[in-house]
Length: 406
Ligand SMILES: *Cc1c(COP(=O)(O)O)cnc(C)c1O
Image (cartoon, rainbow, N blue to C red; front, side):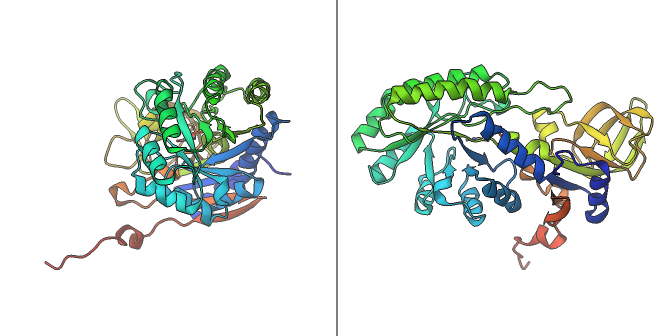
C-alpha cells in the first residue's frame, strides 16, 4: 500500500542517512494529487501541465511524465529540463513573462507550445512565423484572486498576460499576419479559494473564444489552494470539477467542436508531498522569547519571509515531549524568522524539526546566500529512499568563479 503521509521514523531515517537540512518528497502524495484532479473532471479528459517551477528535480518530472502529465515551463531552461526528462515537445507549454524574442525563437525551434503574454511579442511572432507556427495567447481577465498581492496576477496592475480590454488589438495583429491561435490561456494567481473565480474567468475566455476559430485547447492556469495549516480551507476541487466540467461541455457545443481543457497546477501537485528537515542547533533564551536556531534559513526556504506563509512545524525527534512556545529562526545573517510563538514538543539541541508542505517553491527558490550549500533532496518511492540531489560542496560554490592574477 502507498501511504500519503510519511511517518516520523522514515523521516528520521532520512535525516540520519543524508544529514540535514534535507528536502524529502513522497511520490505517493504527488501521484494521488495528480489523479484526484484528473478524476474530478471525468468524463472530460483534462490535460495537466505540471508547473515545474514549483519543484523541478528530474526525478519528479519523470514521475509525473509516467503518470501522463505534461509540463508548464516559464524559462527556456525549464523547457530543456522537461525535454531531458523525456517529455515530448508537444506535451510542453512555454509561458514566459518579459523574455526577449530570441528566447521565444529558441523554444519554437525546440517544438514546444508557445504562450504569448504581451502585444510586442505577438507582433514579432506574427511577423516571424505568420501562419507557419501556431501559438496560444495569455489573456488577463482582470478578476481578483490570489492569497496575497505578490502571488496575485490577474489584477489591473499585473504585468502578466494581455488585458482582455486589448482583445480588438490582438485580433487585428492576428488578422494582419494570418496567425493561427491554437489556445487561450489565463492564470490569475496562486491560492484561489473560490471555485467561482475560475468560473468567472472561464466565462471571459469562452466569450473571447468566439473570435478564435482555430482553437485546440483552453488553459485555465492554476491557483489551487492547498492546506498549509491544519483545518485550512482549500479549493474544493470536486465542486470545481463538476461546475467547470459541465460548463465546458456546454461551451464546446456552442463553439461547434470539442476542445481540450488544460490546467497548470504546481503547488497543488507537489506542496503536500514535501517535508523539509532541519536540525535545532541552538536553543537561545532571551528576556522576551525562546529562540530555536536551526541549521537552515531563508537561503533554503524563503516562503515564510517572502510571503508571510505559514508552514506547520513538528519536532519529530521528541513527539511526546511537553509542549512549549518557541520562535524558530534561521542561521543566516539577516532576520530570517520561520515562525513566531509556535507550540512545539520540547526542543533540545540536536533535535530534527520538520517543516510540512515544503514541496513547492522550496528548493527551487533556494540560494547560496552566506556561502551555504543548497540542501540535498530525497524521494521516498514505494518505501525506498532515493537521493535525487546531492548536497552541494565547496567546489560547487566556486565552480564558476574566474581567477584574476593580481
Ligand atoms: C506559477 C505558475 C503556475 C503554477 O502556480 P501554482 O500556484 O504553483 O499552482 C501555473 N501557470 C503559470 C503560467 C505560472 O506562472
